[in-house]
Length: 52
Ligand code: SF4
Image 1: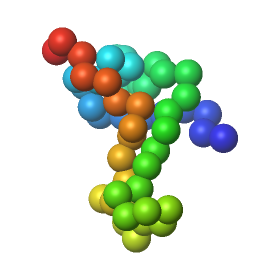
Image 2 (image 1 turned 90 degrees about the vertical axis):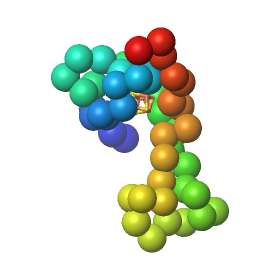
Image 3 (image 1 turned 120 degrees about the vertical axis):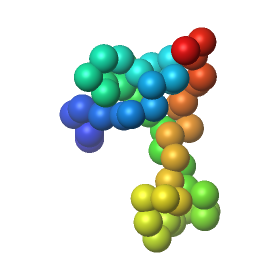
Image 4 (image 1 turned 180 degrees about the vertical axis):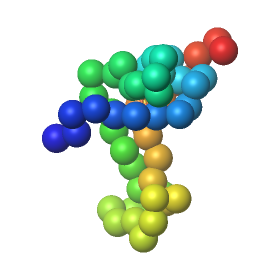
């Protein structure tokens, strides 16, 4: 399991100072089904836009 999640998406509700993710857990998805060939094909589905 990931101990710390670092993230640079400042306008996510779960983003915190120091590029920390404050969500209890995150869900990462692939754009290309159940596999991915590079990190560009993955995304955090837990993202929720904030008012920033
Ligand atoms: S939920 Fe996803 S997008 Fe939002 S801060 Fe955490 S890792 Fe980043």
